Length: 376
Image 1 (cartoon, one colour):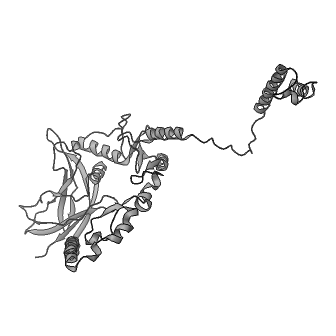
Image 2 (cartoon, rainbow, N blue to C red):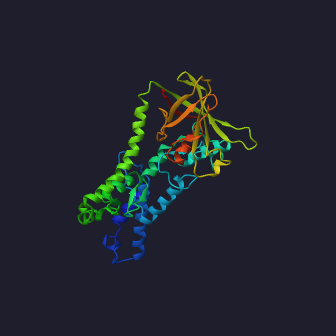
Image 3 (cartoon, rainbow, N blue to C red):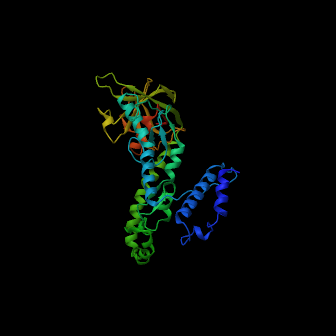
């Protein structure tokens, strides 16, 4: 029998070492009792460490982290998962360089656009390794982790996972800013959603006179008429006998000036039996467009063929079939001849600077050109 078993038996059967003798009110030598208890605790500890854990045993429950420590953990995750450029948590796609440094989609596109404007290779702001759309990839694990981090609703100040915050703010939050349903007839009220029923019950706009309503409807008709005019013009152009369209690809080039400037040009293409070229420039050839927050693109259409008589055309640019840039259609007109074979630079009707950066960050800009020849 081992010494451990001998000690166990000795404690159990030794005279004067009854269970009462081990209690607080034990009669006999208290030092021996305390020593016996310590020996038993030590032996129990040895027996617990000895056997290996049972693989079929269910996993132990995780210890709940105190609220203060949880907050510290979230702060550490914020600092680890934030974008290395803007130092904010990404709201959509997350890209990483070859060394694993994270960039949100907006900053990544902006870095690529800046490098195109400065004729430099884009680099990671942390490790200076080269970055491009081919070298960098999305980090789906970080995107998922960021979507589960808590964030505060700007209206009710409650905490929600970032993945469900947008739906909460648009549909569920009782404090979200909303407008009166009679806004279309002139009601300017804005307020929290939970006050909307009370306001609509007291709103005076449903009781307006017919004359007042006719003035409001007139303003609405003007806005609607402008939109319809554009669509009617496009439908009228589609009735022309000679219509041509093609996919065009703007490629980046540099001027030969001392301070080079970025411009774009397409290869020659044929539409309506004529040869054409498109050119584009950034911020109307501003000296340092990379220093400007607001960025725009303008383009011109150039007729390369010789014509016997004036060629009156309408044209417009739309997004290509594989691009996601948002372009509002605008119809331009020009009468081409051998003397006036170039149009003025006209704005490319993109929505904002973010869309412009998307185009500048791309290797090439792919759009679709429509040309309508006006019959005399």
